[in-house]
Length: 224
Image (tube, rainbow, N blue to C red; front, top):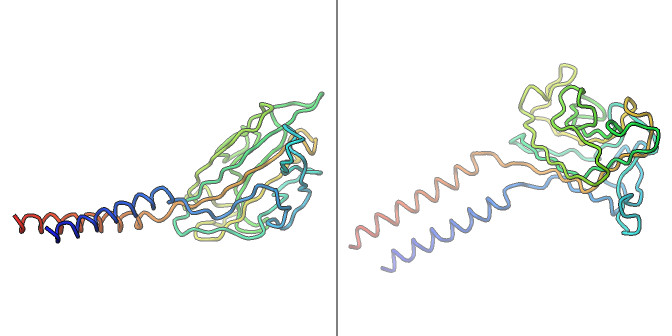
């Protein structure tokens, strides 16, 4: 009976560990809420911190731009990398149209690349016709959260003949010069880059759980 309880405890502990791992499976590689300056970015380009236009008295700082760019304007200072090459990039986006200017393409773009600027791929932007975008950013006058999962192993992440799989990547943002030609009307906040662990990690945990379950079952049968 004690042996059965002992192995039952092992199984319970492994189940708890596996559940905890599953909940925390995404590994945070980069996080930015713009409340501590722009120390995580280099070069900064025309990126500036401004008061949240949706609530100027809240004390919340967000990223905007004093000029228009192309090929990336503000870059994460340090690259991120996960062996699985599967990343989720989430961020809040707001565009504020001004009288006399179109509201469907104000120019906010998000990309990843292996250098500054180096090879790069745009993953989100305000032009539906722009090639390769995973998400089209819309103008609705309010903060909108976007979450994009990308697989850098795929052929999509090749620019100028250079594949990006297996390489550390940088995140970059801009107010695109080919948009409405008006700087300072797009905003970013609460950026998070997470990685999905290798599938083998899950497989090892499941294999261990199955093995302990089998051993406990055999011991239980032997005890009867």
